[in-house]
Length: 77
Length: 319
Image 1 (cartoon, rainbow over the protein chains, first blue to last red):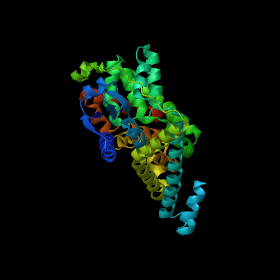
Image 2: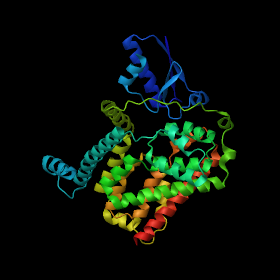
Image 3: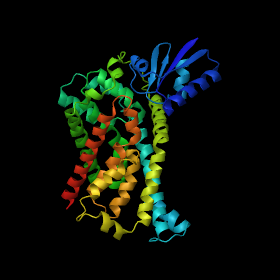
């Protein structure tokens, strides 16, 4: 079971990122939990300044902008 | 190329006559839409291929611990070459504060960033030519440099929200990047979709406003009311008009083009461009999360004064 966190303070791109991740998970049948982190202190504790960021199992894989679908599938594979 | 296309479409296919209001406006609209969007896609794609886009995390690492003047220089230059979405202003601000970067330097970055970026520069070059581009960029860098210094005089630290000082940042994560050609291509395409998807509205609105101005506002009216002689107040008026208006830096360019074509003086035009791009209510509301109103009011006033001075300066030089 993968733990995915979307770091973002609620901008349009953050919502799009979360939606995209949920889509990919559902489509590929990946077991994962998606959590939205919108507390700025927590976001920055990951060392991320450009939102949205994506954390998979404690590892920051992406920051700044909606990630690419193909890349997302790679990270989740 | 783009002018020919607009000639063909508007004069020949639609059968409108040059010189009519609607014809001129449509011609402007078609020419600028095709040209600007072509340039946009091309620049963003090439920049994406080069992977020259700096992340704010790297900017922060680079600026921290440098002597003040070097920190400011790099903040201004990096602000100019980094396209970042205004929703990143808050984490960026906190990240800079946490790294011990002086607030004045942070403000220099925040001023430079929305006003100048590589996309706007290439579109400026394509639409208005190199002289205006150089003037705009130099004026923007100067305002960012001195704007930050003036902000520092007011000791804005006392207006920073308390929680900002308490946040501790984690280590900057190293993200592995796919540097193969296929990976770069994918990244570049993604950048094009992302950035064009974000700014196309502003650009189209800008072109539409420019087209209406171009087609429907009589030249004599412009010369009489906004022309160079006598009207010292036209520059501050342009700045004031620009404050409630907000657009992306690229979206402002067609408006400037139409104004210059009609004989609005260059300083007045530059002042309006900068005011629309850099001073905006949404940006202020976002910054309000980290800093209180007095500092924001000073920030807006410092910028308004700076844009006015720039406008007057260029109008004087142009005489």
